[in-house]
Length: 542
Image: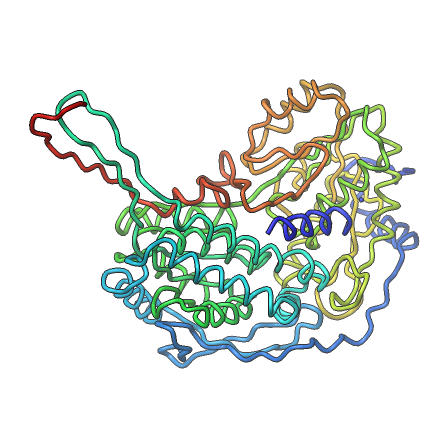
């Protein structure tokens, strides 16, 4: 099992890592933007986008998965899921809405209240989860191809990193299934006190599009290990892979109604799930703005508990004792991994002033060497962004960076004339008040900021309404220890980044959410605590 984690970490670390153009005042810049972009373009390595490679897989599952069956939506409506390489339709998928959520919740409630899943021993549940993990491993390449086709991430990333980690996660949670137990608490009076940990019931789960199957595993794994039933809504941009693996989970022996998967849109299917009166618990990964809505809907309905993993604007701090070449590579990976579409991306690269100019020059060179193209082509590091909306949002932020006076040193425009490809973009001379330094871009845009000393970078790093993660690159143990305790974030990576072993809890401070995914702490999201107190008559001991 540990091999999958090692492969994931090895892949992630190996997959990625100035004569800066000086800007004038903001008013003078506006007239110079075309010439600035032209100068940057002339230094960029253009990658020709050839005809897209045909994915080695067929789409077989496009309906809703409810009560162990693939069914059409109640309305009969479908929506297209698109190939981000071209913008063309891959398949038309059943569009679930309120009625379909009601059907799915009814099936999940029946499976929980009267079905075998919560009444199985933990050992029996673990065997089913282990069989499922074996099936994922058996179909690894097929699942990876579907994930890449629907999402646009490099196939090598899917096949050698993410899908093996999905397998590892389900084996991890299978191991927990028969180890969840309560405790006996001593009382001050003649009473026997048991504290029971019970499954919470029907769990509603809403997952994002940037890591569809990893987020499926982060949510579904602990919920099933604890004996719950599930209604899961996929992101409308990436509905396909969850439907395929749900079929495999049923094949592994999961009883009908335990896992129900509804594809659809947030304002309809997502809102119906969040506000449903018969859902006992809600888990959501996505934007902070949507997280606000999810919390409100849960509160206005039945006050169901909610765990949230939301946005981030993570600092990547490079101290002056760092090996610059290694730091450049790590900071490059921290930002550009997964096309920059990562909630914990190191999107504020803080570099000490003594090494700043050299770092910027080398960061520019690394960005220019980044291989962008068809994600099915071997050696490609960066595929397209997920869709047109995200593509346009990224281009907006790039224009904002130029307008606000940051120095564009590489990229800054789309690549090719079809699909949603963006050139790897690097900004220098970024200031804290700029939009690109404050807002989550969720794209391949690196913002490099300068700092003078440790206290300054701590203050500036924490000056954000996000608090998801941070990276630190230093040779000093004292510096590392100071930063790990001072940074107000859920994860700090020291001389590494994006290490996501199954046992490491992940979640944020502040407006990056609350609750934790992965690790033992994730089980707490799906358990109720019950105290049972029994009077003892003439006890021999207390």
